[in-house]
Image (cartoon, rainbow, N blue to C red; front, side, top):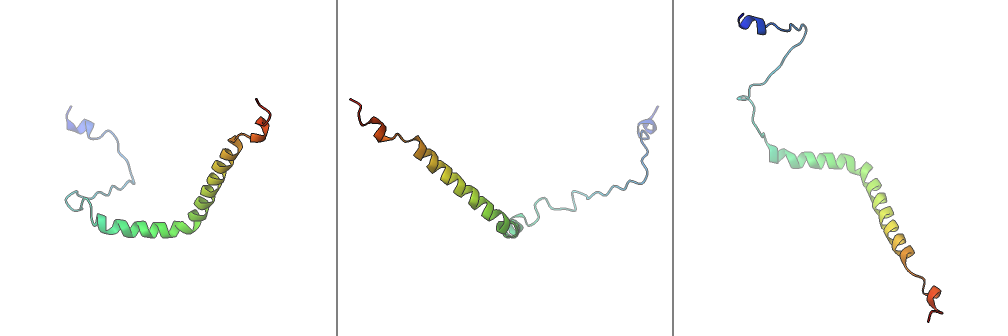
Length: 83
């Protein structure tokens, strides 16, 4: 029993493994330079579609809060004849 037993447990055909050496790649290549450009590009591509939906949802939320506050108020006419 040697290393040849555990090294031959599975034989897989037609599978190609591609690996990069950790010495040939940078950990954070141009991270700060590309972050803002990518954010701007992504935001500009999504904003025309998501912006109106978020605005509509916010306006519905404001209306709901105002309507809830209005409905929770007491009617002073109900208490005119109280002693």
